[in-house]
Length: 180
Image (cartoon, rainbow, N blue to C red):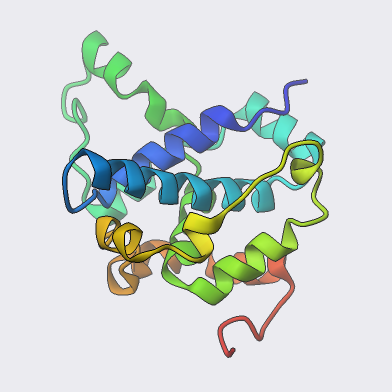
């Protein structure tokens, strides 16, 4: 069974960067996407901690972006009259994971939570064999913060981050993350 979460990570990253776009040109867009991808990767690795979990989601699919689109008021191309071209254009949306998007939003808007999440992955099978670095998520510089102003804005992300926040805290096994 495949254990690759790349389609889920790519689609959820794309959804986040469409819903909360960068505030500038090409460089800002690239910095925003890098931060979103790191947050989504950490969230996906937390959500699917074992090879079996990853294999199961690759078989069953993560659920899609429907509820998230509704929550954020996203304008989905072809939502009213989905023709063959419109379906192909938005097929990636079926690989968006609502829980992963919610957890990523929480990580992006709460630095202490992002640090706790990255620390929780230290002994994960996801981290074995390949060095992973999440600096843009846990300590973005001024340019990165400015580029991703919408993507990191706690008030804008709150409705999304709150969807599955209790599950994230349970997964991290911590009640003190937000107090510190």
